Image (tube, rainbow, N blue to C red; front, side, top):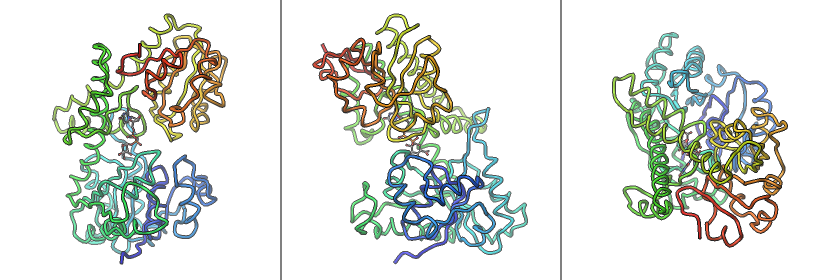
Length: 459
Ligand code: UGA
């Protein structure tokens, strides 16, 4: 029977908050610490602050009982056996991960250690960070046998974060101490022993009632590299298929057929081969740059990653050219924009290629009516509404009297629009889709000129 463990999670961003409520869902007692008092109050009151499926339910179920929110890291350290660091590691000007928050947390934890603690890196950090954390803690006077530092990278995706956390493909525990590895093994036992999936009220996901996700034990450094290498590899896959899509456009081939054909090879796999306007979000751009920088600092050539970044940037420019080709000149053109978030089912706009494109079209002199089911408020903070940019209440309002409609985010609801209505709402029936949400033949049947990524237009 898995045992209940006292866990502290430092940081209540995407990873920290999701980890905190999911650990509670797995049966543990959790203290989630954030130094932002306003956030702590909001979470105590049941406001999730981010748009994420199942988060409201889990927060409602556990807040102020199995998950307590507070800003007192000293108290959390004293009470808990495992302390997960899930604070931000933003990109610094040089491309490196800025680890100042991690260091500050490590030093603060050190000041309150009086019994054995496992300190867990949950944030994405470069290799060797575990050693820096260890040194920082020792420098603050903590005896070496009173703590271990382990790496337990998180692979959840925004939009499906809770389900991903509870139904992982794998759990990676990088520990150089058996004692620490055993604590982490205990924390994840409800998943690895499968007891969680037998519960009638388990959050649904890819693991069925007999599932037991594997837990991979590695060295701490290997675990750190697994996280960076995984994200960088996924970014490679996306840039690769985008480059192939461009080749398909030049040859009138269909990238969807190509991706299916490639993906049927079990060595390649079908996932992350969707072409588009380039990857964005708070992870891939930052992690590719950080991983490249790690290699550079070690004197190693990983310029392949610079090419990945270059293809990613170019993908936005190619989309702009497509719009230019469809509309001839851009100055004064009215564009409807569907989607501002960096991908569907999230309100996150960090490094969103959709927003970069909105800025590019505004700079070209276009006026824009934009709609996003969840990300408009956040976007308006960065790009306030004005004479050239308005935020509207529906996809059809964005299309109203527009010279063309642009699909920039893959929200599921954008894939099921009433095409007849769209046709009559638009000034010119032109849809330029950066996410390949429609079948070109269906668009043609509905009288729409449809331009997508790496696929021939239907004729
Ligand atoms: C990514 C990883 O998928 C997670 O495994 C990882 O835990 C997370 O980063 C992290 O490091 O925290 P996330 O950024 O939430 O997750 O989103 P993804 O679903 O991976 O999408 C990233 C970007 O790639 C989006 O802009 C998306 O539109 C784009 N993408 C994704 C494509 O253009 N094509 C694809 O086939 C897949």
